Length: 100
Length: 165
Image (cartoon, rainbow over the protein chains, first blue to last red):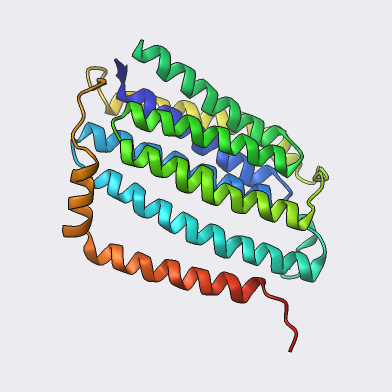
């Protein structure tokens, strides 16, 4: 038996690592992967609390999050391909046209 | 036995996640992310969410990560260059991250009393119940999401195609 809070703390750690990756990494594909990591951490919270409250709605929400994540990955990677075609680089430091 | 499995998979998930941050080549990061997703799938199984575990492996570790690896190879992404532009992030990042984690852990362990345990084999529902709920109570969101997927497919094709006209 494991306390429920362990699952939630694990999910918080994963979410924090995803945030750190989002801020530290410089490759746009890796930044996108960090966002996926954060989505996964939130899914773990949903499933753990779905168990805790004895409600299946949490798992159905996870299903919807996964579907939206799949759509997001498809569109996001298409945008990355378009950006790479235009600028010839994946480094986010070189994508600063809109920087003031 | 159950706590042992939990700690093995939790350590694996955190280790793979740290590896995702440390690796400099995107392919290595992608493989670490697949490891995180596989460990999370086993954790879902231990929470009694068999359907979610299967979908995690098939959709996330299968479809989405294949898309990522495909794009990394298509664009021939090399190692990322490090830039040390932000001194603030360099010196304050790690301490603030730890403060955030400790705060969150304290709040969580206070909110959920230690006697709310996760017991193996004591699960609220199974895949058939999820399907029934999904197609009765959540039918409209399901249909809306399928339209979203269709729009995403068309949008991805439009965005990624070569403009030749």
